[in-house]
Each structure stands twice: as structure tokens, then as C-alpha cells.
Image (cartoon, rainbow, N blue to C red; front, side):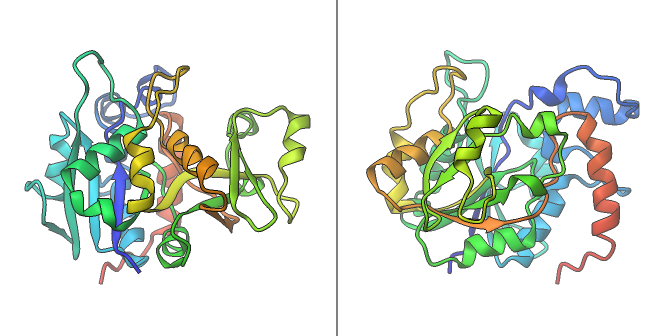
Amino acid sequence: MYENLIILAGGASSRMKKETTTGLSSELTVQANTRTKSLISIDAAGRPVMDYLLYNAKKAGYTKIFIVIGENGGLMKEFYGAEDKGNDFHGLTINYAVQYIPKNRVKPFGTADALCQAIIQYPQLRNDSYTVCNSDNLYSIEALQALREINHPNAFMSYDRDALQFPIERIAQFALVSLDNEGFLENIIEKPSVIDSQRYKDKEGKLRVSMNVFKFNGAMFQDYIDNCPINEKRNEKELPTALLNMVKENKQSVIGIPISEHVPDLTSKEDIAILKKYIEKEYVDMNWD
């Protein structure tokens, strides 16, 4: 089993910065408008959701953490260690990779670019296995552990769409995954209609979605990351694009691990109060040992 977890935290957080009437305190509003989402204060002690993601990662057996930050990601180092690599946080080794923005752009170049830059800065990942995930989703211990322990070289958590506790209009925007009869990924379908959605039920009759937490074999996936094309609609290099390119050339190379649970997240200011309540309920006694 491997011990590497790459957390993507260098995004622009555009939706979090949109104006809204949520009743947030002025302090939290400032944080939402200025901080990367994973560093917004989310508990009574002022600690962010990144703490809870790292806690779950440690309990799932990861020891080596690579956090991809932006060029102005100094605040992350105030929370998790000032050195570029080798910081200790509750027994986890925290390393940082910087996602540099190309000169002709004002925003980061997407999640595939973030992963690519992390691997350039930590070449050992090129030949090792690793889990990669978003920084603003609170993946469970069970999900992270399932990816770390599975024998398949590449995998993703295949979430039961009906178990996600988001508003229905938000869930309707999620892409569906298409799986073969053995549970291997075949395709990702963006914004299918209600009628078309029924075609993509798995063998258990469930509609499945990806919440962007994956396991990759570094040696197998590297060429697809290096050569990921730009998504014309979003003008970014996206991880699912690289993933699907690998699947097209290597049938049954990515297995879906079925799971039925909610994934708390921080997409917009409305999510902050919801996540606060979730953490108050679910993380009463945190024991890092």
C-alpha cells in the first residue's frame, strides 16, 4: 500500500467570492472573499476544513501529504508548516507544491495542470501511486482508506447520487459516470437530461457520480497528465479529461469503488454554516494519535 495524498488547494475559488446574503459574520465574509476555501475558519477554534481532511487522511493511513498551493499561498504555511517540504503536522509530513500561473493567464490552469506541476516538483510521484483530491471536499476516512487499500492500479470513489445531501438543482448539475458491468469507468457524462440519466444506472440500479477523489498509478497516468488537452469550454486542463483519455486507450484501467454517503463541501458562502454544523456534530472527540 502507498502513503501519498495530493491535495489540490491552488484554485481561484471564484464561486466562493460571489456576493450573497448568507448572514455570515463580517470576519467570515472577509475570509470567504480572500482565502482559499480550505482555509476558511470552520470550527469554534478558528481552524479550517483542511484540518479535518488531514485528520481523515491520517486515520486512513496516509503519511505523506503534498498540498498544491497558489503562488500567494503563504497562509497555508502559517497553518501547516513554514518549510517547503518536510513539515510535521500531527505526525503527517506536509510538503507544498506551487501551481504557477502561465504568463498569459490570470487564473490557474486547472486541476490537471495542478497535478502536473506537483509531480514536476516531486519527481518521485512519477513512479509511485497516490491519491489526489480536492481541498474543499471533506472526504471520509472510509473513502480515503478504500482508495489506499484497493489492489487496482487506478480507481475512484463512485458515489451514489441519491445519498448526496445537496439541493436537487445542484445535484442535477453533477456529471454522471458510466460504468461497465464489472464497475470499470467507461465515460463521464456532463449534465445529462433526466431521461438520458436513466441509461447510466449501474448494475445495482444506482446513478453514480465522481466527487473528484482518485487513486492513480503514477507511471501509467503520467503521459496523460503531461499531454492533457485544454477544455475549450472552461479553458483549463482538467483531471477528468486526462482520466478519460487514459480510459479510452486502456479499457478497464480505472475501477469505481461504490460508496453511499454524503460529501460535505465548501463551494459557496452558503456552505459555510452547513459545514460548521456538520463538524460540530461529527467531530466531537478528535484524537490524532
